[in-house]
Image (cartoon, rainbow, N blue to C red):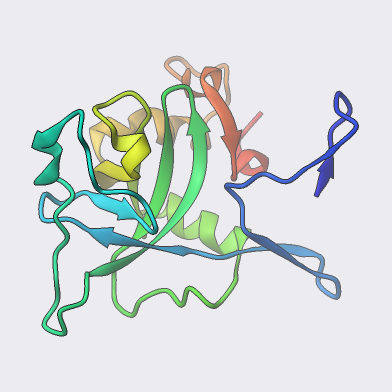
Length: 179
């Protein structure tokens, strides 16, 4: 837990699931589970999929079921919170990430910047995606729609067009961002 200067109480960021290994002194992170919907979106674990305000979202939240009659699971990790939403790393390749295993932040960042994860967005103000925990707009880091994200992690703030940092509230990879 961190002690913030402006607060007397201790605060632990709920977005990070971290474990500290004393002998190697490095941050370790753990992925969580999401579920694939028939529309191609991802539903966060333990989220409400009922949307009274937007009944047309029911199709969005219908889960894909595998041959064992279980929902398709996918590994996800929240890596950024910005004004209006959150960004998640999505691992969809086999073999699956072991959600019981912890991964180093260096390992995850390297895989992220080298395109081994997809990026998904959870919009706060689009329909009831935040309330229902629906991640959509899933794409590769190399997609044009993610050019701001890639620029943020590969170029300094002085670089023309690098404006993503202005709306970021929390960034798991803040230590990797060029100054």
